[in-house]
Amino acid sequence: MRYRTAIVTGASRGLGLAVGRVFAERGLNVMLASRTQPDDALPWTRLDVADPASVEALFAATRERFGPVDVLVNNAGVGHGKPFEDLTVEELRETLDVNLLGPMLCALAALPDMLEAGRGLIVNVGSDLSRRFLAGMTPYTASKFGLLGFSGSLLREVKDRGVKVTAVLPGIIDTGFGGFAPEGSRGERDGMPAEQLALQIAWLLDQPEHVVIDELTMHPLTQTF
Image (cartoon, rainbow, N blue to C red):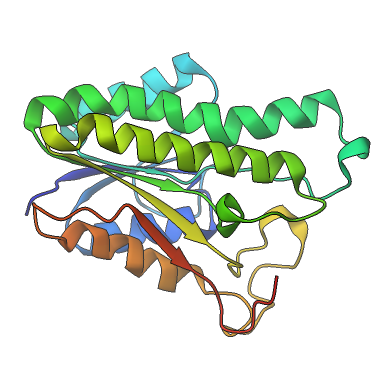
């Protein structure tokens, strides 16, 4: 097995928890990380993804339990669906801190293990809004544009040393993200089940050593915006 130990952020429920479970089924050591504890028996560490000390504590706990980290899934995210003029400064700052600064801090903490081992996979879960615009989601869209830029630039810094970086850009997922619809309320044609997308993220682990997937974009068949 090329990869051994994975950290998955934003893993209290939804896509993050689904990714953690799929990874564990494949035999990886998995550390879930989130603000609230998931209803799952997998190892878990509390994480404020925008707090450098909290990120350091997460990686220290994972290394103590499992050893070096060679897979990181940056899944933690937040979005406020409202007109830009109605947003508060706190909501703007939270969106950028969680969606952009947080993945950077986690990647910075993960890279020493990966570069020393000469292998690693960083998955940054963005959004299909990383490549298009949507009214009412202004700071979220901006943060996901930034995350895509970070992913592409970081890949070109580290790929020659064996570390891969993939931006996953999903459309609507049936997770209840942002409070737009309750989790499990959409049909699979209208909102992708988290488990389906988790399997595609796990597929990235299977790519040959000489192949990197820069971007992976998926959306449900009936999505129109």
